[in-house]
Amino acid sequence: MIEVIAFDADDTLWENEVLYHEAIKKLKDLLSTIQSPELIEQRLDETEIQNLHIFGYGIKSFTLSMIETAILLSGGEINGQTIQHILEIAKEMLTTEVKLFDHTEETLKVLSKEFDLLLITKGDQFEQQMKIDKSGLSEYFRHVEIVVEKSQESYLELLDKYKIDPTRFLMVGNSLRSDILPVVGIGARAVYIPYDLTWSHELVTMESDDEHKFDELEHIGQLPGYIISLDKL
Amino acid sequence: MIEVIAFDADDTLWENEVLYHEAIKKLKDLLSTIQSPELIEQRLDETEIQNLHIFGYGIKSFTLSMIETAILLSGGEINGQTIQHILEIAKEMLTTEVKLFDHTEETLKVLSKEFDLLLITKGDQFEQQMKIDKSGLSEYFRHVEIVVEKSQESYLELLDKYKIDPTRFLMVGNSLRSDILPVVGIGARAVYIPYDLTWSHELVTMESDDEHKFDELEHIGQLPGYIISLDKL
View 1 (cartoon, rainbow over the protein chains, first blue to last red):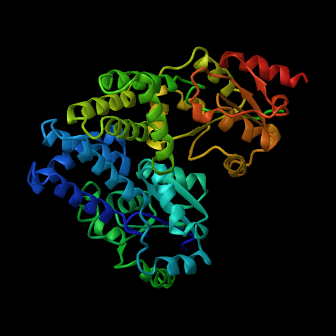
View 2 (view 1 turned 60 degrees about the vertical axis):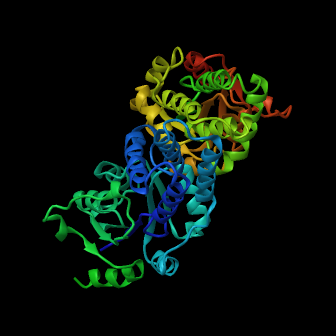
View 3 (view 1 turned 120 degrees about the vertical axis):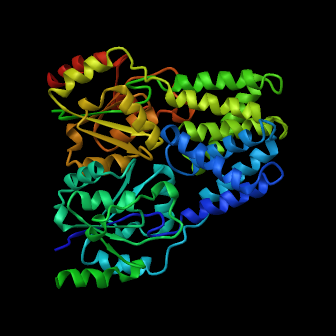
């Protein structure tokens, strides 16, 4: 019954949020003489949310918010060397290797022989494309889509563009907000693979009846078995 | 003979490069006690080119390079307030209105009735999408494509995706490097509308035989007349 399987990228196929956690840890060390770790994290979070509609997602946006937070917390007294350290943190994030999760490549390899695979990712297009290139996984995907927002509307547009029937479509991802709820909302199927570092902005409160509309797996390696079980329903 | 007309966005439909020029002017004022305007511009240019492969195109990338340049030129001594001013310059660039060129809207309106119009733009996806939304021009375009790079390969991919015959395709833009030469390179037609502030990175040296492969107009309002003249060939 399923013909097309779409995957989220960050924290579904490879580690991503951990890079942000490591960067925040470095920022706290860098500003440890100025403010407490808790206040640094709280102000950064507020600054990020405030800037999201102007800067969008991604490491460059995050970096501008780190810099703004450092200036704010220092009362404008922070010096150029410290800001340069923040720029170095950003460049390291942008140039680091992509760390695939266990089972990712073998699972995509197997599934790509039987299904059309799509990659549907949200975020800064340039940064996402860099990661896709570095991941070595491009060959398994029929199409790659980097979208600005993952909503019911944007999924409907994609399905329409590629002439995919929602009942033949399965989305796999780690974000209830972006990968799961909008997909079940348009009558397609979704598999939730939780990741314990998912960004707080991506967390949502589930309605009690949402829970029955999608399935949950522990890791991506369980996906082929799950799909076999669907066929037997 | 032409069925699909594609337009570049920045500095073809609306002003863009002028925002960068104004920002550079403000940066020079801000750093006027530290360095000469010439050196500031030169260092910024070098920093941008150096960072392009990590940061990509767009205002956020440009802002990170402005900050890095200010730190470099001050020997790390620049303070937080000055960096905050640079962040404010960036936010103003990102939130300013989109200024359409004369004739843009009327030309798109007329042409959209007879042809499929595409928007093909390069740059930061989030920033480009914001400008497209603010421009009020979306309704005239059948498809909008925000690509990472405009090369022969990326044009071929797009034509293939939308099943467009290159001989029925016309591209309109202000950049020889991105809008014109790759398009004539794949056997399609291109109309060059020069803009005097085109970013130096987009400038190329033309081969003498390139000149005969595309046409040049002074402004977008001349496009309908040009297309009529093609039909009479």
